[in-house]
Amino acid sequence: MPNKKRLRFLSILGPGLVSGAADDDPSGIATYSIAGAQLGTTMLWTAFLTWPLMAAVQMMCARIGMVSGYGLAEALRKKFPRWIVAVAGIALLAANIVNIGADLAGMADAAQMLTTVHSHVWVFVFGIGISAATVWLRYADIARTLKWLALFLFAYVITAFIIRPNWFAILGDAFHPPAFHGKAAWSTLVAILGTTISPYLFFWQASQEVEEEKNIGRKLTIERIGASDREIVDRKIDVGVGTFFSNLVMFFIIVTTALTLHRHGITNIETSRQAAEALRPLAGPGCFLLYTAGLIGVGLLAIPTLSGSAAYALAETFGWRQGLDEKIDQARAFYAVVLLSGAVGIALDFSGVNAVSALYWSAVINGLLAPFLLLGILLVASDAKIMQGQPSSRLGRVTVFVTMLLMFGAGIGMFIF
Image 1 (tube, rainbow, N blue to C red):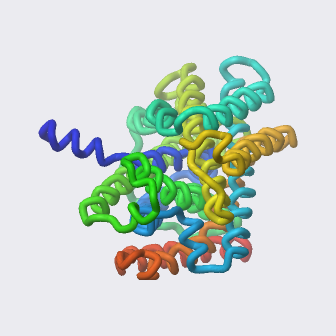
Image 2 (image 1 turned 90 degrees about the vertical axis):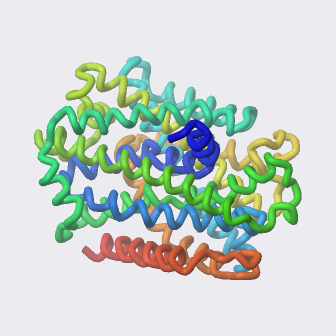
Image 3 (image 1 turned 180 degrees about the horizontal axis):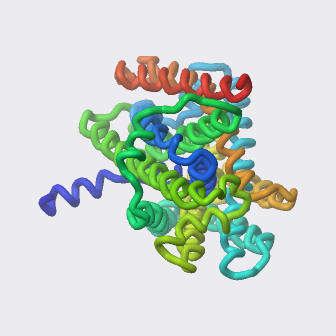
């Protein structure tokens, strides 16, 4: 690729890439590890399914932010009564707090493996440190550095090749969904869908499109209305790349844990140490270092996204001043939500809940909440007035509709079967 084209490609990557990196948060790593350890390679097909679905959903949310001039919650408020959007925002806040608590627990549990310092100490260190950084620093500066830590997750890709699996058998499982038996399979499907197609990323993606436009000088809503064809194509590339790498990492985490943990009878992961053992073929005793670095890296990226998305949703619903680049004295209510999310997340980690279990069930919660939000997003994206004459394409709407039905079906299947 010529240098000019390479630089142009790199300049396109932005909110979509960050959302993709944040999607492989500690909750995601735990969910994929449990899927591989518990069910082997039988859930690999979900990686091929979730990429186009996740890309379609994230692009629809991005388009809403790009052409309407405001975030997702405000767009929803144009379509539905404020109280409905407020309920959705509060539900998002509750789900995100659980997710933050689970992510902090996973990060702290992993850090304890290397330092022997009790995980409760690390919960405070990570929780307070991340909350302070989110309030006082520009998030773009934080994300630019920390998203590279997510590259440690590619250790799973390398490990998968080192153990020399039977790729024909693996690809057979990847393209042939098995018959579902038992609650474990259904709940794992809901968790996988919930951690790849997550409600907080819907709000985050749309709000970051608004922030991107503010950064180039479009401060007023009227200045942000509409998007050129080139801007939309660029964002499709950005979202496509971000979601591709997110699902690629997911695929190889399942492969690696299936061929290391599941193959050796470790089917019930209860600690981060057990999950880290999947990387032993690559790093030997250093598997704990790789696992810890990757888990903490994506946690540092994901937690500001979780707290920030809830703050954006509530601020847009109630008309508060907002933005992670605003000063705290100018957006008190917005930052109060950010700090509340971190504080309650820290408190949850003293309830005695198992860290890996908490990470997994936070993904299940997201999987149950997401389809209800997708219905609202679909109605907004189809409204020509809200979308300023640039509604989502028919293909995009059909894909998101199918995603919504699939997530509703998985949730119902979990409770029935």
